[in-house]
Image (cartoon, rainbow over all chains, first blue to last red; front, side, top):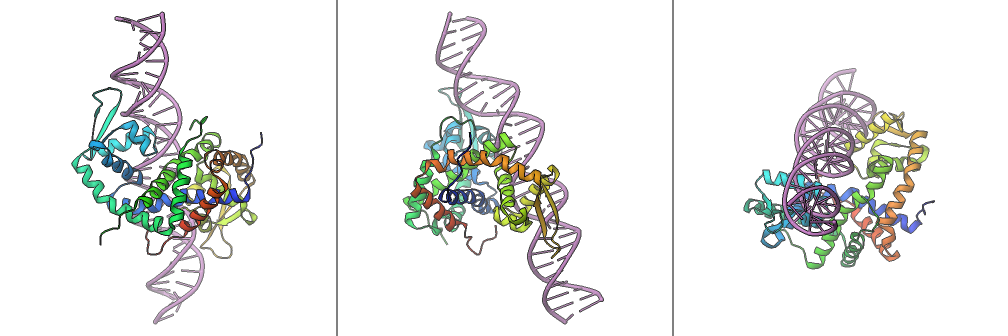
Length: 153
Length: 153
DNA sequence: CCGTTTGACTTCATGCTTGAACTCATGAAC
DNA sequence: GTTCATGAGTTCAAGCATGAAGTCAAACGG
């Protein structure tokens, strides 16, 4: 079964997408890493917790919201727990779930890191795009977030 | 100097971009990793070499083309060399540069991996987007590739 | 009840990535 | 010429990510 190759237009979208994927993580993570000692994924995790009701979420919901695997999240939250930013406990209503809750110290950390992140996002992305580009980007991302069925990975 | 926060429209572009960055690498890398033992960055590196004149490039050009750091590239190319996919030698015209050249065996490897990659790109990206989306994506990526000055990282 | 299944985590070994600190070739300054 | 400065590339240690295999709690079937 020969795979259908890409047309020129598709190829341009492809190269663009790949370069975004390879380039932006480093650019967006740099300031967070240097000045707050956080990875981008760390920041997104803390940020999602800080916006949740009572600043807590089930691990599996958090994994979904951060687009990460449960394995990855488990490791990250373990490190947070060791630094005192998060506490973990079984969900009282169903012991199969684990709840991760942001501590006051964890909240302080997000608040410290947020301006660094916003500034980096402006510098490397938002401020380089027109409003129409921004709408297109949001639309494109929404379409790609939907994962096709029949996929293992 | 307080950082300017994001408007709602900017925030949607931002969340979209972040989710792309966190989600797509894993999806695009899965098939390559499972069936060819390559990372996405590995594949892009081999692919760039295979398309270059005489299938060879200076390390620093290759780093630029793959959007990677020289450190990263050096490690990756060292592994390629050990597997016999690449040979390295100093540029005869200027000993400060190092040239990395794809071997026949390395070319075979790219040829083997290419259909896996194209299929994954179709499944997870291209085929989910309209032609207008594809044009927008290429345009957006082109704008973001331009790195702002005054940046360390 | 008791075994089985399901799904939510956790752990661990392995491999990759990163920044800091090197080495080395060349061109420039004196 | 000798010393410096520059920039390419490498190495190393530390930390992070991943998939496979494990644990454990609740639901389900008989």
